[in-house]
Length: 122
Image (cartoon, rainbow, N blue to C red; front, side, top):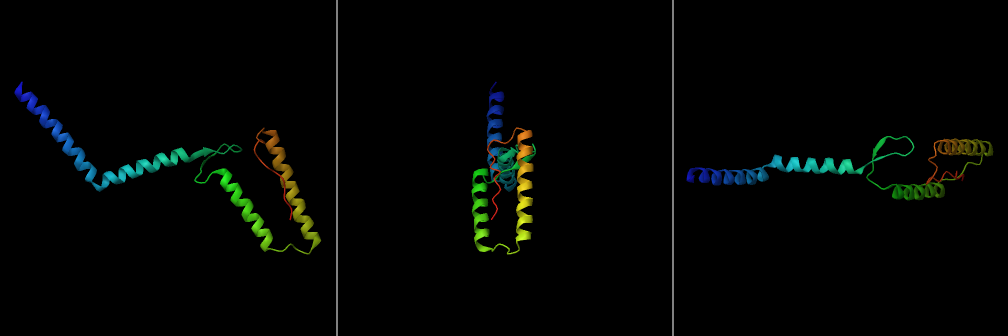
């Protein structure tokens, strides 16, 4: 019995020293980092409502929309509109047709909630 108890004690010490050695090993840190990264990526993946595909969201949609509208306004402030009315009308017409097509698609697929499809012509 004493021999079995000694073996069990030695076995526990062996496992303890093995765990400590693993934690000092550079590969152990790499494994932990990779596992953490994979967990982060899996939790940051979301499904795109319109297409159903998976995407990695590092920036929330609300922040992305806000930033894009700010940049669009900045672009309009820094760039002058064309004086050629025919070209301006052509671009506006294309924008309105794209807006209508998107609205029709979203309405048909009942995904219109939460989307602002107002075409902003400069």
